[in-house]
Length: 187
Length: 121
Image (cartoon, rainbow over the protein chains, first blue to last red):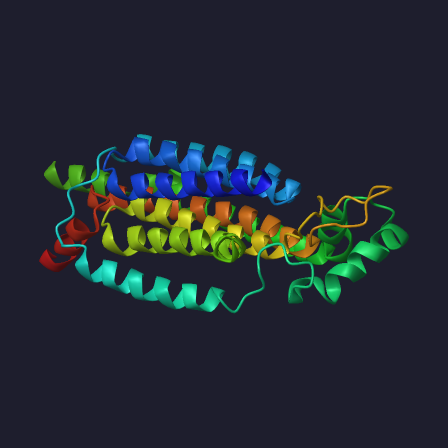
């Protein structure tokens, strides 16, 4: 049963991405992007990653979609017809995909308890988290306790991105934008 | 039956590869900058799915320690991807801000038009 849920949700995701690639109405593309994120969140629940699912549903499907819609409101809604034939990108993508699929054949089978990823570090955290930190949720414990400094670094990244956005869009910058310059030249 | 198990064992990885390649196709074949960013997000999510797939353990449950459960999925990919999702949104926001600025400056968000304006200058 779980395998079927997995298969169907992933199939939906593939269909959604196909539609995103074909559509030229950007609002529809952004909405499909939101659906794609929500499907990703569901597949994370199926794969036991509940914390990731929370974050993907709120941040990926929520905040990203709002950011995209805001950008659409400030720019344009319809994509121009592509001028080039998509032949060369298609070839590049097919070759890369074939190489990657060949690479997956060496990976451990999905759900394998003996996979290399489950050998050294993961069992250590699963055994000792309760003793060291007293937090039952291992993901939270690793994120905020064992690797707290890395999470601080993550906050730095977000802070830097925020500064970048303010510098790019702040009102002091928009005053001297090209459109106003053009108007001044016309006058 | 064997081939069914073989497909089931690699199905997640193959779909992740398909999604990544579809995202890459959107990024390199389409000229619209917003579409490119959506493609980039698709690519990014496909990598998340690949990582979480590696962490899944058959018959395991979410890595929240509970009495009476002894099989858990691998928590470490979850931690990595949790960080990646948040950083991904930060980069998306920065990219979208750049798109808005480009639109201010060039009055278009199509790559071809931007190139032709640059050349005519």
